[in-house]
Image 1 (tube, rainbow, N blue to C red):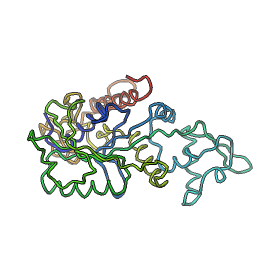
Image 2: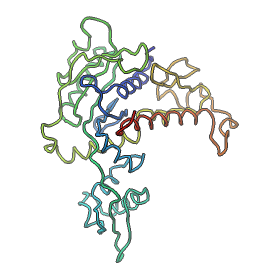
Image 3: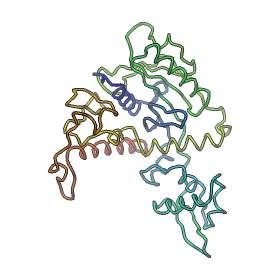
Image 4: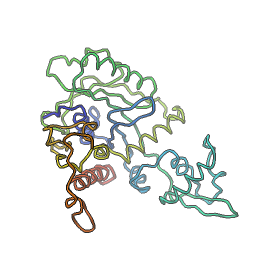
Length: 332
C-alpha cells in the first residue's frame, strides 16, 4: 500500500530507482540519494549513474563523503612530493583553509603528507577517479493538483535551464486514466514523467514512462563550465556518503513506536502510535507520542550494541552497503 505521507512516497521512488534504473534504456549502474542539491535548488531524489570500474576506485577512498575542501586537495594531489601551494591550484580563498584540508585529508588516509624545510608537502596515494557519468534529478509529487503542478513547473524549468542535471523527471502516482493528468499540466517538455504504482510497494516495475525526457547535458562534456562540473561532483560525493536511507539521522528510531515496515522490496519507517508512515518533521523528540527506549534496552550486548533503534540503523547501513556492492564489477 502506498504510504500516505509524501515522505514515504519519496522513499519508495528511491527504492524503485535503486532496483530498476534506467526506466527507458535498461539497467544502468547507479546509486540513489535524496534531498540533495545546491543553495538555490534541492532535489527530492538524485540518481548518480556511474562507471562501475571507476566507482570501485572511488570506494578505495573510503565510505564517507569527500567534501568540497577535501576534493580540492584529493583531486589535485601530485604523484610526487610537492609543497601544497605549488601542487594545488589557487582555491579562491585563503591558503590557511587549504592547509587545514590537507591535514584532514591525511588524517583520513586520502593522501600522504610530510614536513620538509618547514613546509607541508603532499602526494597522492592513488588517483581520484572520474566515476560520475550522469546525474538525474527526480521531483516526487504523488498527488499532482494544479497548485502543486505550478510550483513544480517552475522548479523543473530551473533544472532545464541550469543544466546541472543530465535528466529531469517528475514522479507521480498513476490514476489509471487513459491520459494521465500530469500530461495535461504545464510542465517543461524537456522533463520526463514517471507514472508510479506502489500498491504492491517498492519494486522494479513500479513505474511506467508517461513522457520521455530530453538529454540536458551538453553535446561535449568538456564544454560544461568547470565550476558546474565541480558542483556536480560535490553533489555526487554527498549522494555517495549519504544514500537515501539516512532518514534515521533526522528521525527518532530510539522511540518505542518507531518501526521499519516492508513495502514490497522496500523498507519505510512506520509509527505504531500514529498507525502510519510519519513525516521527518513529525518523528522528533517533540512528538507527543515520543517514548524513548528504556536504558536497559540501550545497553544490551557487549560491547554496547544498543536497543532496537540501533539495530534498525545497522539494518539500513547494511542495505546501503549491499547497494554499493552491486555496482562494482562482478557485483550481483
